[in-house]
Image 1: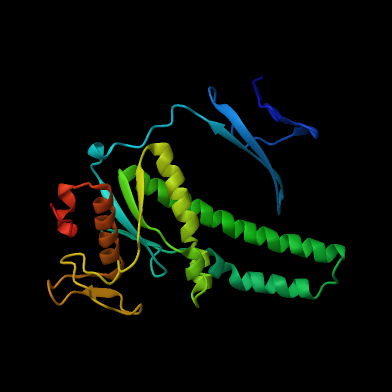
Image 2 (image 1 turned 90 degrees about the horizontal axis):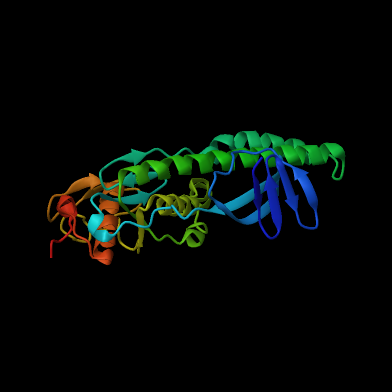
Length: 270
């Protein structure tokens, strides 16, 4: 039986001992591998029970790849029509987990309004609604992790927009933006990239959808226009793909990197 200890907690197999609380039996989601050192322990109460989150440290985590070893790079543009579009033209459909569960949630909220506040049935219905929200959150998080791992396995450098999520959430598209949870996805992408030694570069999103990725000409368009058509160089692209190419161009320019395979995306060799 392995024993892992920290100043404030001790973790044995299926048993957690906390200072000032004592021993608590736990259901272990996965065993802590040998050679890792424990750093912190966080106890959190959720809709379906109590959770213990233990952060661990491993010195074998790879460092970020040097710029001269970067061979593959992509720009990622997130949106509401498609969850993301890469500069290679690949798209990922947006799942809209909250939108799909919205009617079910409305029915349960209506049942809650009919129950007497403070009663056992009211408390039980509140917990049921909280579990629905928890399930939606876990679905969304699992989706974000899957997409992040797919990108990290394929590219050495990933360029994303440095979005102001709070500002965007004040618009009429707030519900859809919060359902997509772009901020959470970018945070997860950065965390997964660190563990794999992949670079994530954030760039200023201003004008990425208006500028032509082929010649740099400014081509104004409303949000309803989904195709980029440049009158100067006759470049025709899906709007989000054009934006993702501009995002990649800005990222490569910021880090001072030139990739021969990206020259067709408007990256100047000078």
